Every structure is written in structure tokens, then in C-alpha cells.
Image (cartoon, rainbow, N blue to C red; front, side, top):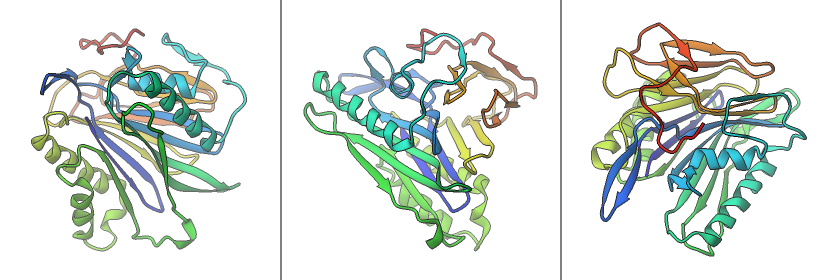
Length: 306
């Protein structure tokens, strides 16, 4: 059970999660994957979002993010990167309904009772030249026969003030992260919390406090920043302890003109430009400036066959 934190303001959307996947044996949990990505970058005809998940770690024998990627992009394959248009584009609502139906179908046949929550945050077009931050959530209890609930947080740009924000958390909520984050933001001086970097630090601190209370939540984090519908996407890897060098996996990138499977990244900072893809900045905190993309990792991702 991971912890997902999403924060949206009139200016940007932020998604932060830990990177630990555990397996259950009896009443105890053991680390299974300490470098998992709990986020998928996805673009529909009217939105650019990141999807995070918590709950069941594997579906049909593969990591949950792999399974979700197959549902969102049926033409996706494990190997390599696909260039070229993936076909007729639909709006975000169509893809969310498709994902909800797939989750329902899975739990009709599943023999286990592990729940699943998919948290969606990003930028959605409301007019030709205007967008707004949005939040959606799909919840399934894990009980056979139950239906997946789809929740949408209503965010109207015209009613937003500059200092307004929304905080959403899912996963193990023992530490009450939403209240913790809201209190910390409210305690800041007026105007200082508008920067995404400040909110990111607050969200990461909340996750790390939760990891002290729960063995299924990791202290290493990953964040995704989406500042506008057509703007740059920033992805950060944030280890709990300073490291001189370490490997990370990029998340799935499912955009109309490219499908990129996870590749190994080493080094500090780089921009990725692929065709019509928005510039994506990958940043590894506390790392060396040397960058290598697509090399072999010293840490093989469990369950990954790509």
C-alpha cells in the first residue's frame, strides 16, 4: 500500500508518491521493488495527466502500471519505444471509462481481495486556449462483484483565487497526510506556497512521516509537475538519503505520437524531446551531473520483462 499525494492550484498540478512495492506473507510485508514508479504520463485529446495507483501491485502477473498502460494504449508492447500516431484520439473521460470497465472485469474474475485506487491529476482543456488543473479518482474495494467508483473534483477556474489549493491523498492514511499538508501550507506566509517547489517539499515530508508509521510506505519519492496543458513536465526522483549515484526507471509515457516504456536513467538532469511530445525534464536529486539514458541498470525491476 503506497501513499499518493496530489495538490492542485490555479497554476499547476503536482503528484507525489513513494516508490516502494511490498508483498504480503501471512501478516507481514516484505519489500518487493524499492524503485517502482507509481505514475504514468498520459495524454488524451483534451488533457495531459499523470495516473498514480495504490493497492494491488500486480494484475494478471505484471506490475499494475504495465497493466494500466495496456488498457489506455492497447497497441502498446513491452519492448522499446513506439513512434507514430496511435490512432483516433479520445477525450480523457472516454479513457477513464475504459479503465473503469477494465477494472470491473478484472475483479469479476479475481480470487483475491486487494483493493485498487487510481488517482488522476493534470491539466484539462476547457476552451480552445484555456486549461485548468483537474483531479479524478477510481476506487475499487477489491470485493468480487463491486463496481469501480469514479470521483471528479470540481475545479472551476473563474471561481479560484490565487491562494486556493486542493489536497488529495490516497493509500495508507494512518498519518492523516491531507490534514498535515493543509496545516503546513496554511502556516506559511501569504503567497509563499504558490511555488511548486515548496508544495513538493511539504508533500514529500508528509509521505516520509507516514513511512515511519507504516512499513508498506517507502521514504524515497517521485514527483510529477504539470504547469500547463502545453507546457513542460518536470519529473523528480527524491531519495530519502543523499546518494552520489543511483539508477532510476522513467515512467510509462503514453502520448499520441510516442509510447515510451521505462528506461534506465543515470545522472542529474536532462530534457527529453520526441516529436510532438512536450519537453519532459528528468531530475535526480543528490546525484552526479553525468547523464546516461537507456543503459543497463544494476537493479533489475521485479516483474518487468521489457
